[in-house]
Amino acid sequence: MLATAAAGLCVWLRTPIPWMIGPLLATSLLSMLGAPTESWTPLRNGGQWVIGTALGLYFTPAVGALVASLWWAIALGIAWALLLGLGFGAWLRRVHAGHLIALTPAELRSTTYFASAIGGASEMTLIAERQGARTDLVAAAHSLRVLLVTVTIPFALQFWGVSGLDTLTLGAREVHGGGLLALAGLTLAGALLMQRLGRANPWFMGALVATMLVTLCGVTLSAIPTALSNAAQLVIGVSLGVRFTPAFVHTAPRWLASVALASFVMMLLCALFGWALSHLTGLHPATMLLGTSPGGIAEMAITAKVLQLGVPVVTAFQVCRLVAVLVLVEPVYHWRQGRTPSLP
Figure 1 (tube, rainbow, N blue to C red):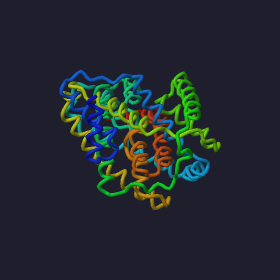
Figure 2 (figure 1 turned 45 degrees about the vertical axis):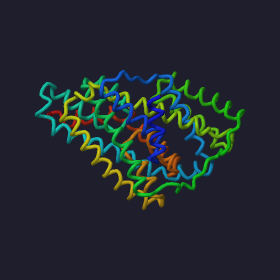
Figure 3 (figure 1 turned 135 degrees about the horizontal axis):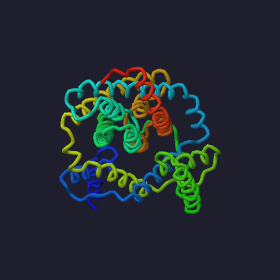
Figure 4 (figure 1 turned 180 degrees about the horizontal axis):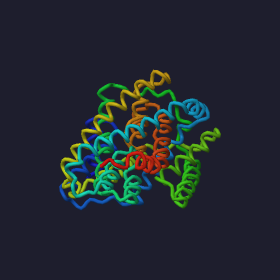
C-alpha cells in the first residue's frame, strides 16, 4: 500500500519512471529505518516476467536487423564494462588495503574485484562467495550502485529533456485477450525452462527470449496492458528497496562512501563512452547512455521503455553485457590472480 501511494505521489510530481522510483525510495527508507519490509519472491518473479515480455515485443524483424548490425558496438560495450570493472576493483583494493585489515590479502582481492564487476547483485554475490570474498560487502556495493544509477540517470534524462524520441515502434500496440493468454503461456514456458537450466534472471530472460523469438518471426499476439506494466515496475522497485536493511546502514561507512563515489564516476565515464558510441552508430546519445550505463537490465530497460529511448537497443546492450560478465568474470579473476600473485 505504501509503495502504491509512493508511486501515485511520483506520478503527481511527474518524476521519471514513477511506478518504480516511488516504491524503490519509499521501501528503501522504511527498510533502513528498521521496518519489517519484505519482497515476496513470486511477486518479484512475476514483475520480471511481465517486463521481460513487454521488452521482447519491441524486437520486430526490422528492429532485429538493426540490433544485429550493431554487434560491433555491443562488443565494444562488453569490453568497456569489463575494463571499467577491473579499474574500479583495483581502485577499491588500493583505497581499502589499510582499512579492511580483518581481511586476508586473498579475501581483499576477491572482495574488491567482485564488488566492482558490473553484473547482477545476486549473481555476483554468489560467485564471490565461491571465491572466499566478504559477501556482505559485495552485496552492499552492488545494491548501492544499482540504487544510485536507477535514481540518478532517469532524473538526469528528464532534466536533459529527452523523451519520446523512439522511432523503433512496438510490434503489438493493442491488447487482445486471447493473444495475451497465448503470450503468457509461451513466456511462462520460457521462464520455467531458464529456471530449470539454472540461468541468471530466469523469469526476465526466459520471458524476454520467448517473446523475442515470436516477435522476430513477425507474429503479433498482444500488447501488455499499461496497468500490468505499472504493477510489475512497482514490485521490482520494492524488491530493490528491501535490500537496504539496517545491516546495510551499518556496513563499513568508508566502504559505502567509496562505492558511491566510484558509482558516480562510472556513470560519468559511461556517459562519455555512450556519447562516443552515439557518434559511431548514429543513434541518439540518450539511448547509448542507457545501453552502456552501469545499472541493472530491468531498471535501465524500464527507463528506456517509459521515456521511449531505443528500448531494443538498450535491452540488447544490457543483456549481452550481463551474459558476458557472468561468463567471463571468474576466468578473468583467475587470470588476474596468475598475473598479479604478489598484489595485496
